[in-house]
Amino acid sequence: MLKRHEQYLLLNIANEAGATVTQSDFENTYRTAITRIRETGLKVPLVIDGPQWGQDIDMLQAAGPALMQHDPEKNLLFSVHMWWSDANGTRVTSELNQSVEMNLPLIVGEFAQHAVAGCSNAPFAYRTLLAEAQRHRIGWLAWSWGAVDNSDCSGQGSFDMTVGGVFGN
Image 1: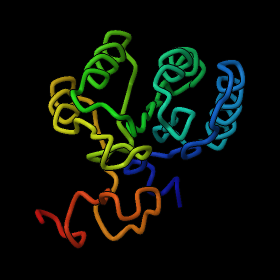
Image 2: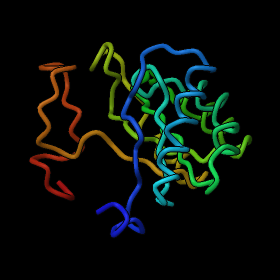
Image 3: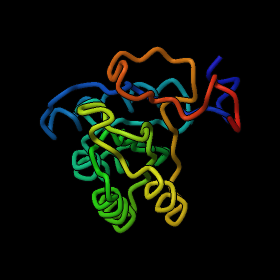
């Protein structure tokens, strides 16, 4: 099935794997996964989330170049989940600039209008993210588009980017 639809797919190796991990363990684990997947003949882009529930962009920046060199297809995307409290967009701007400067193929795999920790009391500058991502040609996926029962911030501000899961609503 994957091979048949390969031209349309991104394959996330492991969503938000590992809370805290050393750079050595992170690299070794993903080297093994990349090798095993490529040995099947799949050429699809492989997505690698940062540790700490996807939020550790520093690990992606540190380990990304070595993992890219390891992949025989040179077809990796590194996914950061921006569940950060960053009301002014200072961190977003800085981290995206740093990733672009190092030529790291980055995607923002998850974000919403506020952080998970602190919820509606921890706003996230998603408009800054969208503007900076467009400026740098970085892809993004918002969490979520609706109808997802998420208990992280229950009653403290929805993560939904739509009303009722309807586009344009």
